[in-house]
Length: 84
View 1 (cartoon, rainbow, N blue to C red):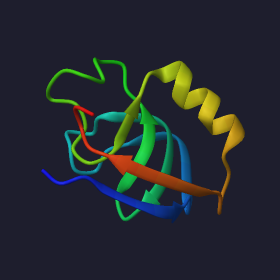
View 2: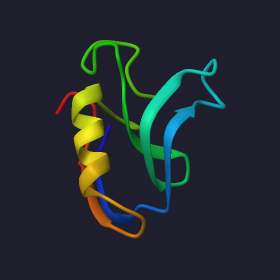
View 3: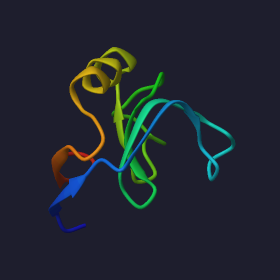
View 4: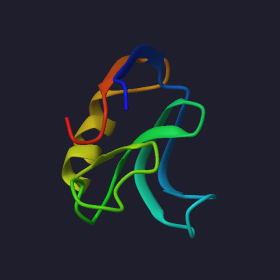
């Protein structure tokens, strides 16, 4: 898989979001930046499968910290791919 990278802006924030695509999975501290992709907390391993289906999974404490520092319209630069 080729690396992808680009600038985005956070356009939606949901403190207690649940996935509408993946079995109502919890996505705490969701901050959406591109279509359905978001930064959000994940209680399982962020390294082992199944992992993300396109989002940037973070440890819950890291997602909560990012939530405090990022707001609507914040520019974010996303790069890499799973496994990098």
